[in-house]
Image (tube, rainbow, N blue to C red; front, side):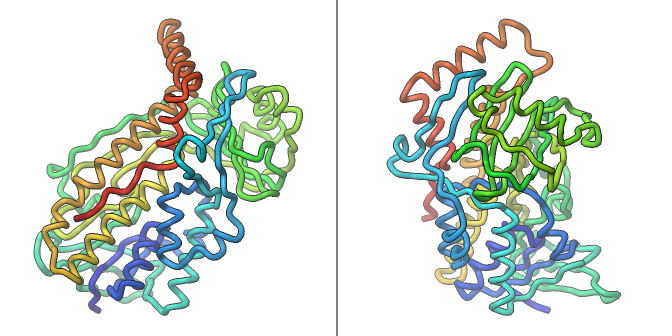
Length: 394
């Protein structure tokens, strides 16, 4: 087999890159180690930056998102029993975010790829990129008892934190930056109406809480829990009781509870690898970086990686501008580190750290108060939340 771009990973970043390339007339093949059903079963983020919304529209897969997604012009900070509104639209010149689940984004991209007959190989094992530092890279994999070789011009590693793409780069080439947080998020999905029209980020002495949503009738809630906590120890009743405790009284009284559809605990970490390319292999999304979910940046950072690589590859195939590819890491990392900073800041401001002393807590209190009580501070939060602009590729 031969293609122009081999994409490892059929998550949203791989599928989005594939759709954009297909629309631009650039042939691509996606290789995924899991089944399609498994990929769709992942419960992930649901807040899309303006830039990702625009990218999905550019890819021609926005019809259902535009019909069913919930446009949010702001969000609430609940600081103990005080609520502060962050007016995203007013503070950023009209920018908003879209609440639309990652599962739905993935489904729309899968349907679009199937409709155009583009190749995706699911349930592929022993996936391995080769000769990335040459002009003739290729990917091998096994499927249904057969061994396959896919020759290509470039390889896009969109296969997540545990994927083979990053692991195929020699360890002495990579520099890893990481911070692991001493807590996780216990999440519950429930078919109950959201407690608030907009997302609520709650800071409380017992820990952080987030009230999110997937639709007008489906809610997603999170609680900060210590690292090592077991999901089996949290009954639905215990979860709802704790959530009510951490919300302002007015919100707690409006909370509608119900049986959980899904319950899980996600650890929190910040992670960046440099560089994000090795010869003709390029890392995108979680393969190269992880952010705490507090800033709603994980899926959106993957989208900006996709935008950068797609734009560069278009210039390669239409203008012969192979020189631009040497700047891939540099361009991506500028935006990634700004998003890492914002996610770290939101996490630090809104969570309770077990080793925090009185002085540190007072400093955190004062910094957060400065930002929320100042229009300039609220503007900084809003600009980062809706997403910093994508860098022009010239």
